[in-house]
Image 1: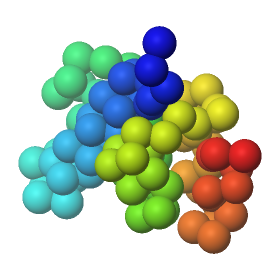
Image 2: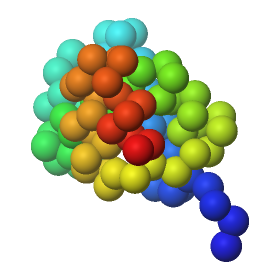
Image 3: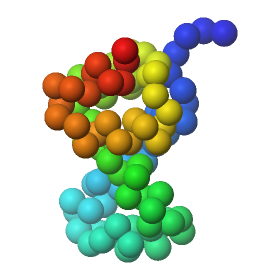
Length: 93
């Protein structure tokens, strides 16, 4: 099988960015509103939306170059809380 990015990670990043745009445009005002609009749990929304704040370098490597991460999707969401300079080492090493 060809080495590449997990499609679940790519879908989650896409969702996170769509949700971020909904918030920035004022279409929803809270994560609870967003969860209700999407018919999913607010806990899931609060975890996945963090992916919208991954560093530009990490996003480029994941999305454009399709490099696989060594992390689970759940762990990847946690990495978004780290400073941008620290993220690549945690995601790819």
